[in-house]
Image (cartoon, rainbow, N blue to C red; front, side, top):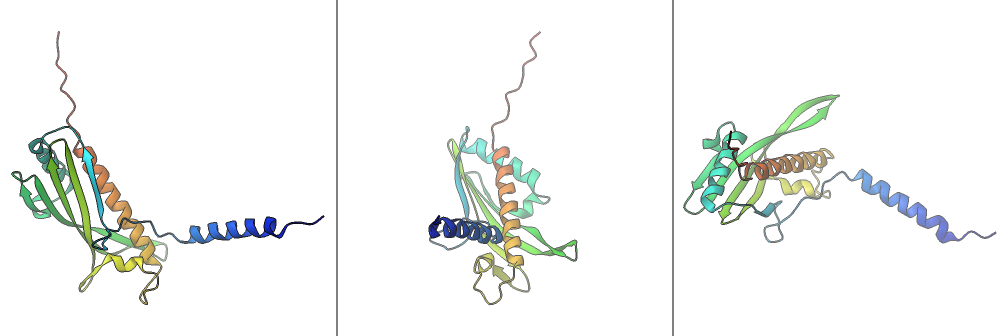
Length: 182
């Protein structure tokens, strides 16, 4: 009985491809085609006029950041624009212990219009002696590449998605107050 070479080779190739993909832990990050920067951007439809949305955004910022006045660089209710510059910590595993690996700065812009708002999170920089654009971590051919960069990118993605999730919850209209009719 002849066994087709294709029946043998195809499963081997599929298995090898899945193993290679499993080894690549780099998350797929959104990169702006024009700026070539990692950029999270979305227009979210939500009930409210620009003033209401602005107030919800300020309320969210006050809960999100320990020092909201320092984090927000622009608060303009007339234009419906808020700009934030902040940071988060990344960690690394070292001998079974989780240790600080540095700080990543980012900028965030929230723009309000009637019935919608847009957020843009970009300008991620790794804070060392000088600031380094995070996008260099995407290049596995870089001479300075280290495997930890993949983990740092995952931490960046997780922290940013958590920030976005919190913003979306904070921008929801308040629940209607129950009237105690007795």
